[in-house]
Image 1 (cartoon, rainbow, N blue to C red):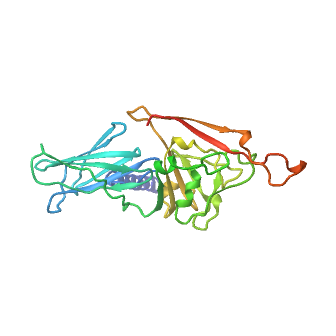
Image 2 (cartoon, rainbow, N blue to C red):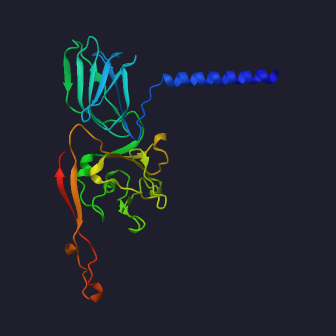
Length: 306
């Protein structure tokens, strides 16, 4: 009877703990920015600064036309998680207040963007449009990161022995050493580049492409695959205060986002060519040094329908 009673007590305790955890997680708003997506959050207030509950909030991706809807809670807080990176339009409306539209809201991978909105008293049929982009201030997390934009990637010149390599832009990240190719072409056929961040071993960097780990176990300071430069949307490099989502990250956690489809026809066609007649000759003269020892690479942009 004692054992039976003890068993019932344990079962009852486990049940109460499970119920408490369920209530806790169901009533908690998470502001995490997953490594593959971004988060948009903010407070909606009236002219006096008081919170406006139950306000309608819509987030529209201007490139794809996908719209997400939410409402503010009792504290006037709204949150959109798992947003695809891109430019969004934020529309807020509430009974007795003038609707407000905020344009040019940039959502980046692995970033939580806060946009606070103050509604003016008036008719909901009226609308105030704010076209200026809100400041890119990340106050929701303590992590230190740097974002490499698609424009920086697109304007990248030839930076490696195989053409353009987005990893060369890591030199812009505070605390990083100049990236450099490592090992021979046989051991590193992608001609990936290694970089040290904040004095930590380059073997502790973690690179993800659309959330999937890009690892090269044989040479852990390199990646196994380099996506085409024209296919990269953005690169987020976290260098400090890593959260659990970053996984096994030491010096840096690098999150590469590939471009997705939009409502416009766009793309590019290009050719990468090596012409032997443009090869440089060795500076010394003689039969042992008569061979061409380097190669000039030409990359020709043919079509751009963006």
